[in-house]
Length: 129
Image 1 (cartoon, rainbow, N blue to C red):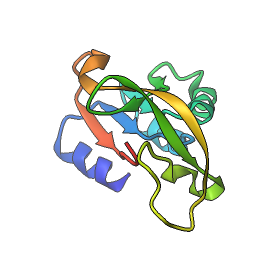
Image 2: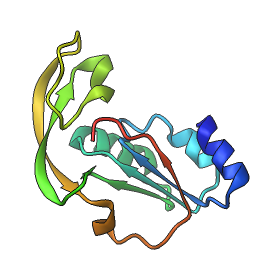
Image 3: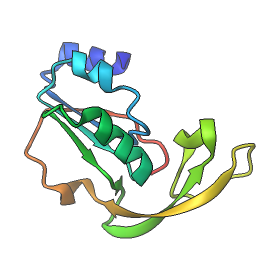
Image 4: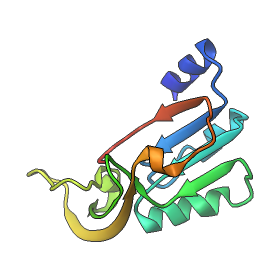
């Protein structure tokens, strides 16, 4: 968040896109920024639904239940268990103590395929995709 605030202080940013939104832990912080648009991108359906629930009465928030990548395609994400669920990734897991017991089919889109109205965006976070 500090990086975003620093960027906002030196640039005319009016919107934010959060790539890899996880469970929307930052929703309350983003509300305080009074942005024109906040777009969450979260490919794991359960997590995208949690963000939808947190933002359902916020007209300036949008949730896209997709992953972002270098091409438009269907894919699969390895979902990390419990506390480590933020480590979920479309890439094969490396040996570690994190357990990936589930996989989920997802849609992956190129950013340019989304056809957003040109916003002055601050980009935040991009784990796993």
